[in-house]
Length: 361
Figure 1 (tube, rainbow, N blue to C red):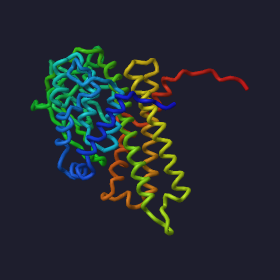
Figure 2 (cartoon, rainbow, N blue to C red):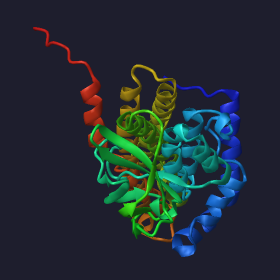
Figure 3 (cartoon, one colour):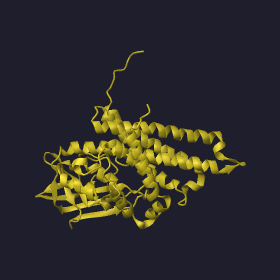
Figure 4 (cartoon, helix red, strand yellow):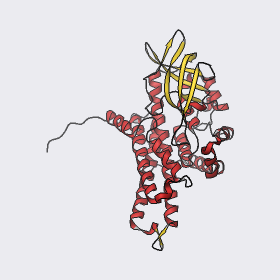
């Protein structure tokens, strides 16, 4: 099945791609990765109105839904844009529906508000933070974009299940410890709370909210992997047309053609999976969990395999800092683990499939 975008969605993707082509060039990206930081990109992203796309208009967003967010994630992945703060905020935004003012501040001013869950696991109700006499204490490892956050949506273990609380980062009892990642285009940090004050978010049950966030995370990370895979294919096709052996481009060799064709098949299959999953989760379809799990498991796994193929076809130059492939290779490998590995999501997919009785021969 081939998923067809609406004319408006296609135009949105084109305009965003053009904008990213101007502000997230290879040179600008390398400058950010070499230590200049990502704040300039984040400020432009907010200031030029992209931050609110895919978010409700009544909260100050530009409208649209998860399909538009997936389109944005795809283009951000294609450019390896430093968008950790955007992704972390988009996961926390639905939770903030019970705090409209906080949601409006997030969309209007780019007040980064991230979901304080470990980036290496599926968001769930297992909370590492407890509350005692109105104070929060605990540690949450490797939270995506925590080093950029101004507010945290913190799952807190309570007597009656998980409660979500909004915590201001500027409290002296809140410590944020950045971690280095091989993929420099993203950031994580450990969070420690030692008597922090939070405000309970008046929304749906905490466990249910985290489950919804997990489905959104699966779709958006898969969309990022799709964009990364597309870029690696483009880089590979360009390289094999230039690199010559025995007096001819290596792209003329049958084995190279087959490897590139397999990458193209993975890209086209992934595109339909991602868009279907986005629409399914957005509409609350009865199979939304299946679609989201399939997107995260299959697309991220395909991107990881495509990264290995691209590196093989590039040879030694693909390992070097001077070539862009290494940036996208690292991003694809992190996507495969971000918010749950492909194996974990395959297990979730299997858990939601109905068991059928074996039939006799």
